Image 1 (cartoon, rainbow, N blue to C red):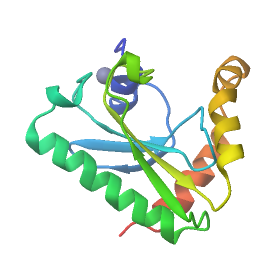
Image 2: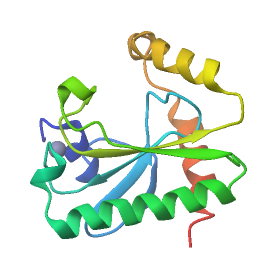
Image 3: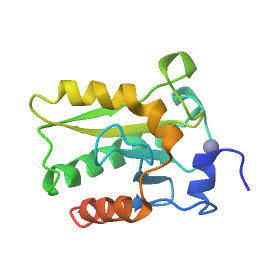
Image 4: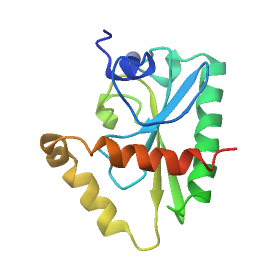
Length: 147
Ligand SMILES: [Zn+2]
């Protein structure tokens, strides 16, 4: 099995609540979400940094992220806004050394909750991941709004 957790997800060696998949990318629910419906989009080929991706992989990663964001907007989560975020390196809080695009819903006036979610992440990681059943439900809700 791959020592990289995201490569293991891409290779279906570990379970994930997958929202979308094609030959280059896979999108799945973050098991330690900062807020509900926190999605990660990755390239299947391992690369730690954005500059290690090919131009095609970089472009495709963002295009998949865009499609996911549109599905998220159309879903019952109905975010008011969305973060598209890549932490490119450890000093930028990249926690898994495999490029991943965060798609994170935001709501009017949710800054306190959002910051609390960020601060609580280490605690959440100790407590363990969100229930697979809940993540699968969220993935399904977003997936059915993909076009
Ligand atoms: Zn990897």
